[in-house]
Length: 293
Length: 339
Image 1 (cartoon, helix red, strand yellow):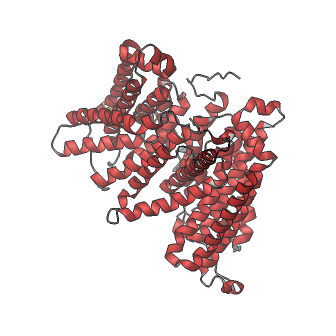
Image 2 (image 1 turned 135 degrees about the vertical axis):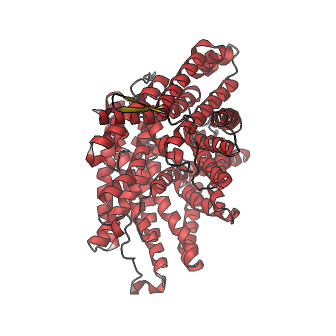
Image 3 (image 1 turned 90 degrees about the vertical axis):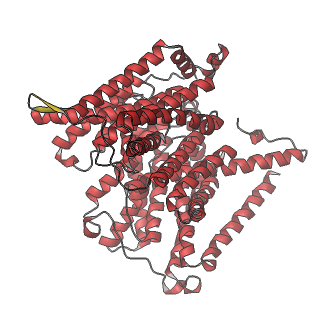
């Protein structure tokens, strides 16, 4: 039982990270209809900036705050400069542009910061409590709190502010939104900026739980985040969070209890997705798109 | 007019073919490698175009089918002492079955969801190979190096070196696959592919069996990718499935299709050459900083998409259409550029 709870917690810890990257993917998808392949690499770049700042002597919390701000600005610039010109092009074209960004950002990151392993300090101290024989680390609590805070802020932003209303309006019908005076371009820029900032936070809290920060740090996370978003339904933020947690927990439990899956734990999320999509092709929380024929 | 254009494109195709046949005489061993790579890349892109371009099913997982072909050939040659060519029918059969097996679940999915599931195939494949194929590989790894194919006596007239002979094998297989694809899309099945892509309900009203067409497209395109993979063993002398490589290949096949021109016969081939030589070009620009090469290539992709959103062949067609309009001829229906 102790082992089970421990694995469950590991799973939730990872799941929280998958969820926050998935949340960023869903946010961009909801507002622009674009699947951003470069999301993981954008987060990687911000994480390197966080590392650089701590290396220069800044405290980790301050470093995360600064790099999140930088990511916010960069996200807006990327939307304005790279995505805007192809906004109305076919989905293929946009896909290829984000793939180009993926390649470019990852190689620029390696060029600037080098490809040796870096150690990023954790934002949380190493405290741990023992609750019914299970050790609960502050890091775990911190990860969960960060995700919860992200969700709450995002929800408040989308549901309770004028900006959020604009974002939702553009997502649901860009033309009508423009007719009532909402600048859809500005809204899309905001969407990308917020997503980039979420990625920065996700990367900065995730990397310290791994052995080291390397150029490949975010690639596996991107795959799991994509799995999480698909599982939850690509247009549902709630789905992204639930999907992320399910993927993380399923992975951790499979490592522990299913011997034949050793080394191939990546099978787990995709078996799950396969099973869910066979019965609900739009994911757990996705809305069905009704087409008029 | 139409027939003149037909003859022109036929003449261009023959010229290109003649040049490709002359390439091994012209270039030395190390320069021949990218030309050989471009050939097998073309075949994979041709197959993916059938699925993605003509049938509208996006796949970012064809690197896995490519790997299935490579491993089938490598294992048969290394452990069952087969010759290279006899492995091809087996490769095709295996890939058709595997492709169809993935095609059935794909029936339920569309667009983004399908793309992501196929991405999952690409992400999974290296793990599966490590698990199941490592017993065939060197020192317990999944790297398999079968004996190289050598140039036989009778070929000494045109291919003295082994790599020249291998290039010609690739070229012959490539031309056969291109002709097959061209015939396929112009025939009944090709029209069914397009009909299903454009409007499923209408296609099914006209008696097209949608499930059969979609699964068929998946199986055939998987077979193309697998043949390409099997030919890659011929060029590289090994089958390998690194995590990054399979993912990269899957992406690059799609890139080749889109920058060449989706749903055109020549597009994926042109795209494949652009991808292979574009990467070489990117490497040459910053000789002292090899890690910047993907950045150059990435920028190249973004710029290409800005300038030619409908691919190289699409851009070319627009150019032709504009010229023929200025000749005083009425514009063709397809001439108006896609907005």
